Length: 172
Image (cartoon, helix red, strand yellow):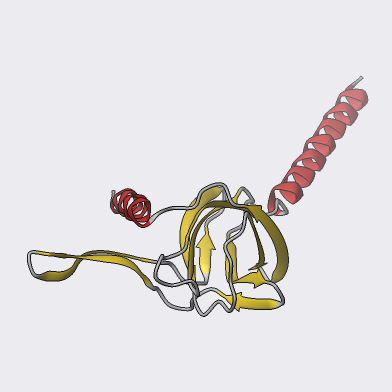
């Protein structure tokens, strides 16, 4: 009888450790997801595009997006390597008291979290904002191609509102 109890306990311990190993492996290899929230093309500049992406990393490891490219006809344009001014206001003679800036790569996403980033693309040649956009994302040394349907194109006023609410959520 004591032999059977020790065998059952050993078998249960083996099954629990096997379940834990499979679960850990699965959690480490969950892919980072990218979603397009909105796009904005300045009315005065057809060679520039601003967009907001939501990045979800439900893996147990942090994720890094090192490069983002937009595919335009046969051209491939990388997102800005530095923050670009999205808009600014002159209030009481104080220039740039209120302004919003884009993010730049690399984008770091902690484990089991989601983050919103605003990216800008400059010097787009013959770019026309259609209903679809294609991107390449380099996430953790692997390049993924993503196709997005545009659901929301912001006007200049909507861009100000969107970035203002984003600044408030980042500061709190």
